[in-house]
Image (tube, rainbow, N blue to C red; front, side):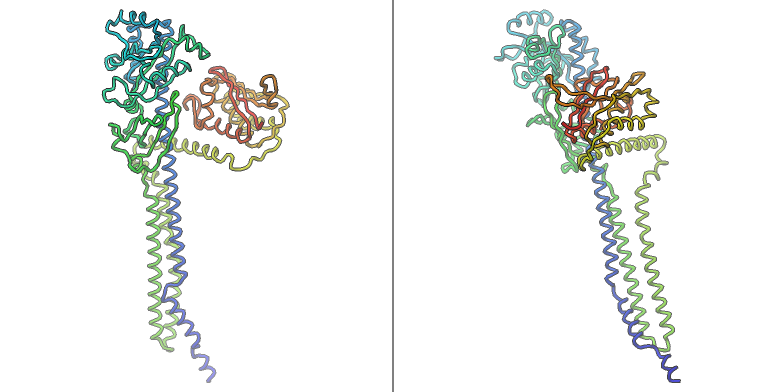
Length: 604
């Protein structure tokens, strides 16, 4: 009987342990703070990664826009160069006998103001010796009695502006002798001596009432339309130059539209400032950002002068590419952490109530104590489930960020959808550009796996990979037998062959596109300097000699995508870097319309 009663009395130690557990439940435990700390760490980590991704995306967009601004200026200068060489061709066709009336007719045919925005005019400057000066003046004054050469100088020759169209706004320049001022004179002599188009250093045009920076653009022409091959002949056979005067601010206004531009441009020629958006009178001044997000500098060889393009992001860029995604992630994570802490405090308060109830209980109310313990257990389970389910809002925010564009596509209309698809195409192109750029950047970071490579096998690999293209484009790929064993990285060797063969197919208008891969020894002064020079030869459109070096520049394309496919322009650049990393050499033999042969070596 006593034994039975004894067993029915609760164990006081068990009750004490239970009470200690309840006491621990009335305060925040280290594990709670660990959960909150980990959650905060994940929040700030996600915010940091998102913030860096946004910054990197914006940086790439800025670099694209900066390169585009420079390309626009370069392309516009090439357009003006074509106009000058057109004038040279006109003069050559006239047997170097050109009159004021004939030049006026030629200039009107160009429709300068419409076809060449930013140019001040186009004219002719003749080289006149002291002995030939009387005859020159007599000829010109027969048509224009008031014509004269000015100002006086102590040079041994004269370079007067003879014709300039339109003449009315450029009347002050008529008769101006280029030999009177250093930059004008140096530029014209350089054009004469090189036989190429040249620009002068910074000058102030006499017809510019505002006295702002400008320059002159020259293209030389020689006696009887000759193209002298040496310096002495060029100096002795020079007749004159066609030229165009430019006011830099007017040129930039016609070249870079400020309305949609998100970069601000400053151009310098050495220490001399040519143009600055911050001091211009167009709309770009209002968009200047005093603390730009991004800045870069391009050094461009501009027809004998080095122009420095200092390009900064402007206020429009800052506005267009602000992103709230990192802040949404940060504040969303903090809200979740606050909710977790609140939940823990709720649990603590519940445990405190349970302890209060337990203190008031007696042995007779043990049953109620068991119920309370069960309630506490359910609360613990609820805490686990609730904390797990609270992760869903974070997932939702991520999904909303990714699907934001898709959710609004149906509200954009047909024009908006068209633009959206165009954006997708541009995004794909940008992805390819970045992929090629990243591959180009990674080249050289790992050591090449060089070994003896059978080039014939690599050619067959390329033939198999391009089989469908060869069939579609009617390509005949041939190669020499018994290629020498080449010590190189096999994978990179195949990349070189693939790119060169693919270029031979892509830039080729022939009915049968013939491509030959061969090898030969390189001879210099009757001696073999390299036994195994590989080459890829095609019968394609060829590359003009003046572009033989430029084609190896990253993303440099000589033709638009509609003419010859949608490549990125990085193929030859990657090929050259692979060759360079092997310590080899690569060069071209090509002329326009006569096919191309690319020679290359792996190592010395």
